[in-house]
Length: 374
Image 1 (spheres, rainbow, N blue to C red):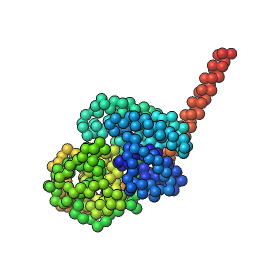
Image 2: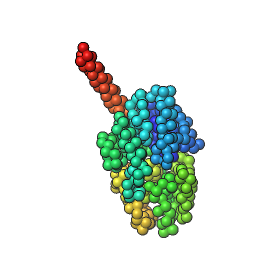
Image 3: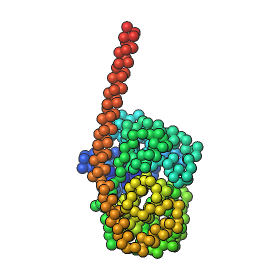
Image 4: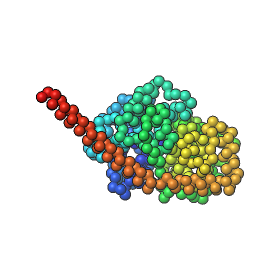
């Protein structure tokens, strides 16, 4: 399984690994993009079924990454020769086209083209043409493609013409996240440098909000640029135990995202009993309809009004908290593990069937050629 330690894919991969552990599924976790943090190393050590292989090869969405992507492909094939996997689970795209000796599943968590369209409101520029070609080739090469929401499934169809994507929603463990004694606090988290998260909008309106607002996350882009915030309390990058504490005490979670194919942070906040105020985008509507307040990502006044309305109405806040947690409990690790196991088995079976059919076709062709020569 490929992974990166930069965003939510890491959280997803470790949660899936934990959920698959009782099913005796062993995972060779190949990490790229950056080296894991100390907290992330601890998460791996807590999993008996995970064996970590790490590198810092740049990821396909990063600038000037293709040399690293190709070098990472050689590295991944070397790992495969060593561990001889039954299935390849790619949490990206490009490496699905490698000469694997096992069936390949792509988990499509996001993509540059849909990010650009949602965030910039225009098509991605020509410098992403190679990305477009490589992703399309990867989707065509994979035996199975999975998306965490119907919205992300539709994105793959729109941008790459890919059909047949399976939707398996992400999960959060309710044993790790739970409501605590709530404080008058609005909490937000994520990659603050990522325009898709739209967190500077919250900073802009913070002085209009009756409660203090705290951010957890990295302000520094992988390229080195930094986002400056003026009106919120910045907690920096927190460990998972620290994040759980913040979720547990915050009464409101805010995420005015422009682009969020699923939204693991909202799920963790909901499990922690936070009232949700979210960006009004298809994926978040799909996941949290009836269990959150939705505001256009472009509406600063509307966001301030929504937050103050939830602050001023304890009954509304408690109702939103109850609904969000009830919805979040539907996204269980048990369900996710069973759906992935079924998909893994189906992917492997279809791959074997295709290989057998191809072998028979070759045999028939050789027989026909032999007859012709005779």
